[in-house]
Image (cartoon, rainbow, N blue to C red; front, side, top):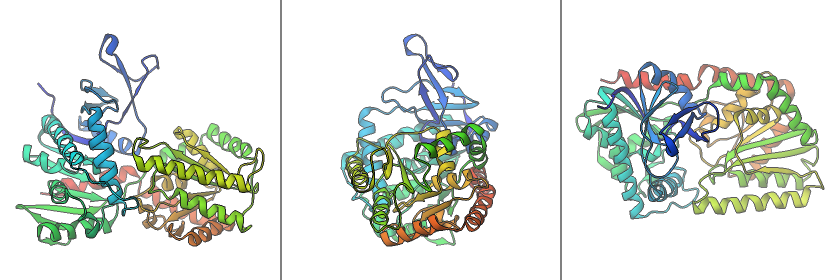
Length: 473
Protein backbone atom coordinates (compact mmCIF):
# COMPACT_ATOMS: atom_id res chain seq x y z
CA UNK A 1 0.00 0.00 0.00
CA UNK A 2 1.48 3.35 -1.05
CA UNK A 3 1.29 6.18 1.51
CA UNK A 4 -0.40 9.04 -0.30
CA UNK A 5 0.49 12.68 0.28
CA UNK A 6 -1.72 15.79 0.13
CA UNK A 7 1.24 17.85 -1.17
CA UNK A 8 3.73 16.64 -3.77
CA UNK A 9 6.76 18.39 -5.29
CA UNK A 10 8.04 17.03 -8.62
CA UNK A 11 11.55 18.14 -9.65
CA UNK A 12 14.35 16.73 -11.76
CA UNK A 13 16.46 16.09 -8.64
CA UNK A 14 15.69 15.04 -5.09
CA UNK A 15 16.80 17.62 -2.49
CA UNK A 16 19.47 15.26 -1.16
CA UNK A 17 23.11 14.41 -1.74
CA UNK A 18 24.54 10.94 -1.34
CA UNK A 19 27.50 10.81 1.05
CA UNK A 20 29.93 8.07 2.00
CA UNK A 21 28.62 5.66 4.63
CA UNK A 22 31.47 6.51 7.04
CA UNK A 23 30.37 10.17 7.16
CA UNK A 24 28.45 10.90 10.40
CA UNK A 25 24.82 12.00 10.22
CA UNK A 26 22.34 11.69 7.40
CA UNK A 27 19.87 8.93 6.65
CA UNK A 28 20.90 5.36 5.74
CA UNK A 29 18.87 3.37 3.20
CA UNK A 30 19.31 -0.21 2.07
CA UNK A 31 21.23 -2.96 3.83
CA UNK A 32 24.50 -4.86 3.55
CA UNK A 33 26.65 -3.78 0.60
CA UNK A 34 23.79 -1.68 -0.76
CA UNK A 35 23.68 0.70 2.23
CA UNK A 36 23.56 4.34 1.12
CA UNK A 37 23.65 7.48 3.23
CA UNK A 38 21.85 10.71 2.35
CA UNK A 39 21.92 14.30 3.51
CA UNK A 40 19.64 17.19 2.65
CA UNK A 41 21.29 19.36 0.02
CA UNK A 42 21.52 23.14 0.44
CA UNK A 43 19.37 25.27 -1.79
CA UNK A 44 16.65 27.87 -1.75
CA UNK A 45 13.90 25.63 -3.13
CA UNK A 46 14.15 22.93 -0.46
CA UNK A 47 14.61 25.59 2.24
CA UNK A 48 11.39 27.28 1.17
CA UNK A 49 9.37 24.10 0.75
CA UNK A 50 10.69 22.10 3.72
CA UNK A 51 8.21 23.53 6.28
CA UNK A 52 5.30 23.05 3.85
CA UNK A 53 6.32 19.47 3.10
CA UNK A 54 6.71 18.62 6.80
CA UNK A 55 3.42 20.28 7.79
CA UNK A 56 1.47 18.57 5.01
CA UNK A 57 3.28 15.21 5.20
CA UNK A 58 4.43 15.89 1.68
CA UNK A 59 6.48 13.90 -0.82
CA UNK A 60 9.29 15.07 -3.11
CA UNK A 61 9.71 13.14 -6.36
CA UNK A 62 13.00 13.29 -8.26
CA UNK A 63 16.18 11.60 -9.39
CA UNK A 64 18.70 10.61 -6.70
CA UNK A 65 21.74 11.77 -8.67
CA UNK A 66 23.10 8.30 -9.52
CA UNK A 67 22.26 6.49 -12.79
CA UNK A 68 20.67 3.07 -12.57
CA UNK A 69 17.87 1.59 -10.45
CA UNK A 70 16.30 4.00 -7.99
CA UNK A 71 16.67 3.54 -4.21
CA UNK A 72 13.57 2.59 -2.27
CA UNK A 73 11.44 5.53 -1.09
CA UNK A 74 12.70 6.96 2.20
CA UNK A 75 12.18 9.81 4.64
CA UNK A 76 14.70 12.52 5.54
CA UNK A 77 14.22 15.53 7.81
CA UNK A 78 10.47 15.01 7.78
CA UNK A 79 10.19 14.85 3.96
CA UNK A 80 9.07 11.72 2.15
CA UNK A 81 11.38 11.13 -0.82
CA UNK A 82 10.35 9.10 -3.84
CA UNK A 83 13.33 8.48 -6.18
CA UNK A 84 12.75 8.16 -9.93
CA UNK A 85 15.26 6.02 -11.86
CA UNK A 86 17.30 7.47 -14.71
CA UNK A 87 19.63 5.33 -16.82
CA UNK A 88 22.83 6.54 -18.47
CA UNK A 89 20.89 6.70 -21.75
CA UNK A 90 18.15 8.78 -20.06
CA UNK A 91 20.79 11.21 -18.80
CA UNK A 92 22.39 11.47 -22.22
CA UNK A 93 19.15 11.99 -24.16
CA UNK A 94 16.54 13.47 -21.78
CA UNK A 95 18.84 15.56 -19.57
CA UNK A 96 22.02 16.47 -21.49
CA UNK A 97 20.24 16.29 -24.83
CA UNK A 98 16.67 17.61 -24.93
CA UNK A 99 16.76 19.55 -21.64
CA UNK A 100 20.20 21.14 -21.87
CA UNK A 101 21.22 21.13 -25.53
CA UNK A 102 17.77 21.92 -26.97
CA UNK A 103 15.47 23.67 -24.48
CA UNK A 104 18.08 25.51 -22.37
CA UNK A 105 19.74 27.46 -25.22
CA UNK A 106 16.41 28.10 -26.99
CA UNK A 107 14.83 29.55 -23.84
CA UNK A 108 17.95 31.69 -23.28
CA UNK A 109 17.51 33.66 -26.50
CA UNK A 110 19.56 31.24 -28.65
CA UNK A 111 22.79 32.46 -27.03
CA UNK A 112 24.15 29.20 -28.45
CA UNK A 113 22.34 27.37 -31.28
CA UNK A 114 19.98 24.69 -29.93
CA UNK A 115 20.37 21.15 -31.23
CA UNK A 116 17.23 19.27 -32.34
CA UNK A 117 17.23 15.46 -32.33
CA UNK A 118 14.25 13.15 -32.55
CA UNK A 119 15.62 10.52 -30.18
CA UNK A 120 16.13 13.21 -27.54
CA UNK A 121 12.49 14.29 -27.85
CA UNK A 122 11.27 10.73 -27.40
CA UNK A 123 13.48 10.25 -24.32
CA UNK A 124 12.13 13.51 -22.86
CA UNK A 125 8.59 12.24 -23.39
CA UNK A 126 9.32 8.85 -21.79
CA UNK A 127 11.06 10.31 -18.74
CA UNK A 128 8.36 12.95 -18.20
CA UNK A 129 5.80 10.14 -18.27
CA UNK A 130 7.81 8.32 -15.58
CA UNK A 131 7.72 11.37 -13.30
CA UNK A 132 3.99 11.92 -13.94
CA UNK A 133 3.19 8.29 -13.08
CA UNK A 134 5.20 8.54 -9.86
CA UNK A 135 3.26 11.67 -8.88
CA UNK A 136 -0.06 10.06 -9.74
CA UNK A 137 0.84 7.10 -7.53
CA UNK A 138 1.78 9.06 -4.39
CA UNK A 139 -0.69 11.98 -4.53
CA UNK A 140 -3.75 11.75 -2.28
CA UNK A 141 -7.24 12.47 -3.59
CA UNK A 142 -7.47 16.20 -4.39
CA UNK A 143 -3.80 16.77 -3.55
CA UNK A 144 -1.72 19.73 -4.64
CA UNK A 145 1.19 18.89 -6.95
CA UNK A 146 3.87 21.46 -7.74
CA UNK A 147 6.02 20.62 -10.79
CA UNK A 148 9.37 22.40 -11.16
CA UNK A 149 11.24 23.64 -14.20
CA UNK A 150 12.06 23.08 -17.85
CA UNK A 151 13.06 19.41 -17.63
CA UNK A 152 9.45 18.43 -16.79
CA UNK A 153 7.24 20.59 -19.00
CA UNK A 154 5.15 17.64 -20.22
CA UNK A 155 4.34 16.42 -16.70
CA UNK A 156 1.32 18.68 -15.93
CA UNK A 157 -0.78 17.44 -18.87
CA UNK A 158 0.34 13.82 -18.39
CA UNK A 159 -0.53 14.02 -14.70
CA UNK A 160 -3.92 15.63 -15.35
CA UNK A 161 -4.76 12.80 -17.73
CA UNK A 162 -3.90 10.26 -15.02
CA UNK A 163 -5.37 12.18 -12.08
CA UNK A 164 -7.92 14.87 -13.03
CA UNK A 165 -8.78 15.34 -9.33
CA UNK A 166 -5.42 17.02 -8.58
CA UNK A 167 -4.61 20.70 -8.30
CA UNK A 168 -1.45 21.19 -10.37
CA UNK A 169 1.03 24.06 -10.35
CA UNK A 170 4.10 24.51 -12.53
CA UNK A 171 6.99 26.93 -12.06
CA UNK A 172 9.60 27.71 -14.72
CA UNK A 173 12.89 28.79 -13.15
CA UNK A 174 14.46 29.94 -16.45
CA UNK A 175 13.25 32.52 -19.02
CA UNK A 176 10.32 31.75 -21.30
CA UNK A 177 11.07 32.85 -24.87
CA UNK A 178 9.04 35.06 -27.20
CA UNK A 179 6.83 33.43 -29.84
CA UNK A 180 9.33 33.61 -32.71
CA UNK A 181 11.95 31.66 -30.72
CA UNK A 182 9.59 29.10 -29.18
CA UNK A 183 8.17 28.29 -32.61
CA UNK A 184 11.55 26.78 -33.58
CA UNK A 185 10.97 23.92 -31.13
CA UNK A 186 9.92 20.76 -33.02
CA UNK A 187 7.97 19.62 -29.94
CA UNK A 188 6.32 23.03 -29.56
CA UNK A 189 2.60 22.10 -29.43
CA UNK A 190 3.27 19.15 -27.14
CA UNK A 191 5.30 21.27 -24.72
CA UNK A 192 2.68 24.01 -24.70
CA UNK A 193 -0.12 21.52 -24.06
CA UNK A 194 2.02 19.97 -21.35
CA UNK A 195 2.25 23.29 -19.51
CA UNK A 196 -1.45 23.99 -20.02
CA UNK A 197 -2.17 20.86 -17.99
CA UNK A 198 -1.43 22.98 -14.90
CA UNK A 199 -3.94 25.20 -13.11
CA UNK A 200 -1.26 27.83 -12.42
CA UNK A 201 1.89 28.37 -14.50
CA UNK A 202 4.45 30.56 -12.74
CA UNK A 203 7.31 32.51 -14.30
CA UNK A 204 10.14 34.68 -13.00
CA UNK A 205 9.00 37.80 -14.85
CA UNK A 206 5.72 39.28 -16.05
CA UNK A 207 6.98 39.46 -19.64
CA UNK A 208 7.56 35.69 -19.63
CA UNK A 209 3.96 35.10 -18.50
CA UNK A 210 2.77 37.39 -21.30
CA UNK A 211 4.92 35.46 -23.80
CA UNK A 212 3.23 32.25 -22.66
CA UNK A 213 -0.31 33.66 -22.93
CA UNK A 214 0.34 35.08 -26.42
CA UNK A 215 1.96 31.82 -27.53
CA UNK A 216 -1.10 29.80 -26.46
CA UNK A 217 -3.29 32.13 -28.50
CA UNK A 218 -0.92 32.01 -31.50
CA UNK A 219 -0.29 28.27 -31.55
CA UNK A 220 -3.52 26.76 -30.21
CA UNK A 221 -6.01 29.60 -30.69
CA UNK A 222 -6.91 29.65 -26.99
CA UNK A 223 -8.95 32.66 -25.85
CA UNK A 224 -7.76 34.55 -22.79
CA UNK A 225 -8.72 37.47 -20.61
CA UNK A 226 -6.03 39.21 -18.59
CA UNK A 227 -3.68 36.47 -17.40
CA UNK A 228 -6.21 33.63 -17.57
CA UNK A 229 -6.28 31.22 -20.54
CA UNK A 230 -9.43 29.26 -21.42
CA UNK A 231 -8.30 25.75 -22.34
CA UNK A 232 -10.36 22.56 -22.73
CA UNK A 233 -13.10 23.79 -20.41
CA UNK A 234 -10.65 24.86 -17.71
CA UNK A 235 -9.03 28.11 -16.72
CA UNK A 236 -5.21 28.22 -16.63
CA UNK A 237 -3.67 31.19 -14.88
CA UNK A 238 -0.19 32.47 -15.83
CA UNK A 239 1.61 34.93 -13.58
CA UNK A 240 4.99 36.14 -12.35
CA UNK A 241 6.45 34.94 -9.04
CA UNK A 242 10.07 36.15 -8.83
CA UNK A 243 12.04 33.59 -6.84
CA UNK A 244 14.36 34.70 -4.07
CA UNK A 245 16.80 33.39 -1.45
CA UNK A 246 16.80 32.55 2.25
CA UNK A 247 17.89 36.06 3.25
CA UNK A 248 18.16 35.24 6.95
CA UNK A 249 20.43 32.27 6.31
CA UNK A 250 22.81 34.31 4.15
CA UNK A 251 22.90 37.16 6.66
CA UNK A 252 23.64 34.76 9.51
CA UNK A 253 26.47 33.24 7.48
CA UNK A 254 27.92 36.66 6.63
CA UNK A 255 27.74 37.69 10.30
CA UNK A 256 29.50 34.54 11.52
CA UNK A 257 32.90 35.49 13.04
CA UNK A 258 34.61 32.59 11.25
CA UNK A 259 33.24 33.77 7.89
CA UNK A 260 34.27 37.36 8.61
CA UNK A 261 37.74 36.15 9.55
CA UNK A 262 37.93 34.10 6.36
CA UNK A 263 36.94 37.18 4.31
CA UNK A 264 39.87 39.13 5.80
CA UNK A 265 42.14 36.18 5.04
CA UNK A 266 40.95 36.05 1.42
CA UNK A 267 41.80 39.71 0.92
CA UNK A 268 45.22 39.11 2.45
CA UNK A 269 45.80 36.13 0.15
CA UNK A 270 44.91 38.38 -2.79
CA UNK A 271 47.57 40.87 -1.69
CA UNK A 272 45.24 43.33 0.09
CA UNK A 273 44.25 45.14 -3.13
CA UNK A 274 42.26 48.34 -3.11
CA UNK A 275 39.45 46.73 -5.11
CA UNK A 276 38.37 43.07 -5.23
CA UNK A 277 36.03 42.33 -8.15
CA UNK A 278 34.13 39.05 -7.87
CA UNK A 279 32.20 36.82 -10.28
CA UNK A 280 30.46 33.62 -9.12
CA UNK A 281 28.71 31.59 -11.81
CA UNK A 282 28.10 28.14 -13.13
CA UNK A 283 30.39 27.73 -16.12
CA UNK A 284 27.57 28.36 -18.58
CA UNK A 285 27.51 30.28 -21.86
CA UNK A 286 24.46 32.27 -20.69
CA UNK A 287 26.40 33.84 -17.81
CA UNK A 288 28.49 36.30 -19.84
CA UNK A 289 31.80 35.29 -18.24
CA UNK A 290 33.80 35.86 -21.44
CA UNK A 291 32.33 39.34 -21.91
CA UNK A 292 33.11 40.25 -18.31
CA UNK A 293 36.72 39.16 -18.64
CA UNK A 294 37.16 41.07 -21.90
CA UNK A 295 35.75 44.24 -20.31
CA UNK A 296 38.20 43.89 -17.41
CA UNK A 297 41.10 43.32 -19.83
CA UNK A 298 40.22 46.45 -21.82
CA UNK A 299 40.07 48.53 -18.63
CA UNK A 300 43.52 47.27 -17.65
CA UNK A 301 44.86 47.98 -21.15
CA UNK A 302 43.48 51.53 -21.03
CA UNK A 303 44.98 52.16 -17.60
CA UNK A 304 41.56 52.81 -16.03
CA UNK A 305 42.25 49.88 -13.69
CA UNK A 306 45.63 48.49 -12.70
CA UNK A 307 47.25 45.51 -11.01
CA UNK A 308 47.83 45.01 -8.07
CA UNK A 309 45.45 47.81 -6.97
CA UNK A 310 42.57 45.80 -8.45
CA UNK A 311 42.15 42.06 -8.79
CA UNK A 312 39.37 39.91 -10.21
CA UNK A 313 38.27 36.59 -8.72
CA UNK A 314 36.16 34.45 -11.04
CA UNK A 315 34.55 31.34 -9.57
CA UNK A 316 33.23 29.10 -12.36
CA UNK A 317 31.43 26.10 -10.91
CA UNK A 318 31.73 23.02 -13.18
CA UNK A 319 28.50 22.39 -15.09
CA UNK A 320 27.24 19.87 -17.69
CA UNK A 321 30.77 18.96 -18.63
CA UNK A 322 29.69 16.27 -21.11
CA UNK A 323 27.74 18.79 -23.23
CA UNK A 324 29.78 20.08 -26.18
CA UNK A 325 28.87 23.78 -25.77
CA UNK A 326 30.16 23.70 -22.19
CA UNK A 327 33.43 22.04 -23.14
CA UNK A 328 34.06 24.75 -25.74
CA UNK A 329 33.18 27.52 -23.26
CA UNK A 330 35.70 26.27 -20.72
CA UNK A 331 38.48 26.45 -23.31
CA UNK A 332 37.50 30.02 -24.30
CA UNK A 333 37.30 31.27 -20.70
CA UNK A 334 40.60 29.71 -19.69
CA UNK A 335 42.27 31.15 -22.79
CA UNK A 336 41.01 34.66 -21.91
CA UNK A 337 42.17 34.31 -18.28
CA UNK A 338 45.60 33.24 -19.52
CA UNK A 339 45.76 36.20 -21.88
CA UNK A 340 44.91 38.70 -19.13
CA UNK A 341 47.40 37.22 -16.69
CA UNK A 342 50.06 37.02 -19.39
CA UNK A 343 49.63 40.69 -20.29
CA UNK A 344 48.99 42.27 -16.89
CA UNK A 345 50.00 39.85 -14.14
CA UNK A 346 53.32 39.56 -12.39
CA UNK A 347 55.08 36.69 -10.65
CA UNK A 348 52.85 35.81 -7.70
CA UNK A 349 50.41 38.61 -8.60
CA UNK A 350 47.84 37.46 -11.20
CA UNK A 351 45.29 39.94 -12.48
CA UNK A 352 42.58 37.23 -12.47
CA UNK A 353 42.24 34.37 -10.00
CA UNK A 354 40.22 31.76 -11.89
CA UNK A 355 38.67 28.98 -9.78
CA UNK A 356 36.97 26.16 -11.69
CA UNK A 357 35.54 24.35 -8.67
CA UNK A 358 32.58 24.25 -6.30
CA UNK A 359 32.57 26.00 -2.93
CA UNK A 360 30.66 25.58 0.32
CA UNK A 361 28.03 28.09 1.37
CA UNK A 362 30.32 29.50 4.06
CA UNK A 363 33.22 29.98 1.62
CA UNK A 364 30.91 31.73 -0.86
CA UNK A 365 29.67 33.99 1.95
CA UNK A 366 33.29 34.84 2.80
CA UNK A 367 33.95 35.70 -0.86
CA UNK A 368 30.86 37.94 -0.92
CA UNK A 369 32.08 39.69 2.24
CA UNK A 370 35.58 40.13 0.77
CA UNK A 371 34.45 41.59 -2.57
CA UNK A 372 34.10 45.34 -3.10
CA UNK A 373 32.32 44.82 -6.43
CA UNK A 374 30.19 41.88 -7.57
CA UNK A 375 29.76 41.37 -11.33
CA UNK A 376 26.62 39.50 -12.36
CA UNK A 377 26.44 39.98 -16.12
CA UNK A 378 24.48 37.13 -17.75
CA UNK A 379 23.44 37.48 -21.37
CA UNK A 380 20.08 36.05 -20.26
CA UNK A 381 18.93 34.72 -16.90
CA UNK A 382 15.59 33.84 -15.39
CA UNK A 383 16.52 35.43 -12.06
CA UNK A 384 20.14 34.96 -10.84
CA UNK A 385 20.21 34.31 -7.13
CA UNK A 386 23.94 35.06 -6.79
CA UNK A 387 23.11 38.76 -7.15
CA UNK A 388 20.63 38.50 -4.29
CA UNK A 389 23.07 36.50 -2.15
CA UNK A 390 25.75 39.16 -2.53
CA UNK A 391 23.33 41.93 -1.52
CA UNK A 392 22.14 39.94 1.51
CA UNK A 393 25.69 39.14 2.60
CA UNK A 394 26.89 42.74 2.60
CA UNK A 395 24.97 43.63 5.82
CA UNK A 396 25.99 47.22 6.66
CA UNK A 397 29.25 47.08 4.73
CA UNK A 398 28.30 48.70 1.43
CA UNK A 399 29.77 47.21 -1.73
CA UNK A 400 28.55 47.54 -5.30
CA UNK A 401 26.65 45.23 -7.64
CA UNK A 402 27.13 45.38 -11.42
CA UNK A 403 24.06 43.67 -12.86
CA UNK A 404 22.92 42.72 -16.36
CA UNK A 405 19.65 44.20 -17.54
CA UNK A 406 18.82 40.71 -18.85
CA UNK A 407 18.85 39.01 -15.44
CA UNK A 408 15.44 38.71 -13.83
CA UNK A 409 16.96 40.19 -10.68
CA UNK A 410 17.38 43.54 -12.49
CA UNK A 411 13.63 44.08 -12.17
CA UNK A 412 13.97 44.11 -8.37
CA UNK A 413 17.52 45.31 -7.63
CA UNK A 414 17.19 48.69 -9.32
CA UNK A 415 19.94 50.26 -7.19
CA UNK A 416 22.56 48.02 -8.81
CA UNK A 417 24.77 49.41 -11.59
CA UNK A 418 22.79 48.06 -14.53
CA UNK A 419 24.36 47.36 -17.93
CA UNK A 420 23.80 45.70 -21.28
CA UNK A 421 26.27 42.77 -21.20
CA UNK A 422 26.37 42.62 -25.00
CA UNK A 423 27.88 46.13 -25.01
CA UNK A 424 31.44 45.94 -23.66
CA UNK A 425 31.67 49.71 -23.31
CA UNK A 426 28.51 49.69 -21.18
CA UNK A 427 29.94 46.89 -19.01
CA UNK A 428 33.18 48.83 -18.58
CA UNK A 429 31.36 52.02 -17.64
CA UNK A 430 29.15 50.21 -15.12
CA UNK A 431 32.19 48.53 -13.57
CA UNK A 432 34.06 51.83 -13.27
CA UNK A 433 31.04 53.50 -11.66
CA UNK A 434 30.88 50.63 -9.17
CA UNK A 435 34.63 50.78 -8.44
CA UNK A 436 34.60 54.55 -7.88
CA UNK A 437 31.23 54.96 -6.14
CA UNK A 438 31.21 57.10 -3.02
CA UNK A 439 31.06 54.98 0.16
CA UNK A 440 27.92 56.72 1.44
CA UNK A 441 26.17 56.22 -1.91
CA UNK A 442 27.22 52.56 -2.00
CA UNK A 443 25.72 51.96 1.47
CA UNK A 444 22.51 53.76 0.49
CA UNK A 445 22.07 51.65 -2.64
CA UNK A 446 22.80 48.42 -0.79
CA UNK A 447 20.43 49.30 2.05
CA UNK A 448 17.50 49.84 -0.35
CA UNK A 449 18.13 46.48 -2.06
CA UNK A 450 18.46 44.69 1.30
CA UNK A 451 15.12 46.07 2.49
CA UNK A 452 13.48 44.72 -0.66
CA UNK A 453 15.02 41.25 -0.19
CA UNK A 454 13.96 41.05 3.46
CA UNK A 455 10.36 41.61 2.35
CA UNK A 456 10.63 39.26 -0.64
CA UNK A 457 12.57 36.17 0.46
CA UNK A 458 12.18 32.61 -0.77
CA UNK A 459 9.55 31.74 1.85
CA UNK A 460 7.42 34.64 0.58
CA UNK A 461 7.87 33.34 -2.99
CA UNK A 462 6.64 29.84 -2.10
CA UNK A 463 3.78 31.21 -0.01
CA UNK A 464 2.63 33.55 -2.78
CA UNK A 465 2.62 30.77 -5.38
CA UNK A 466 0.85 28.20 -3.22
CA UNK A 467 -1.72 30.75 -2.01
CA UNK A 468 -2.49 31.69 -5.61
CA UNK A 469 -2.73 28.02 -6.60
CA UNK A 470 -4.99 27.26 -3.65
CA UNK A 471 -7.35 30.09 -4.61
CA UNK A 472 -7.96 28.72 -8.12
CA UNK A 473 -11.34 26.92 -8.27
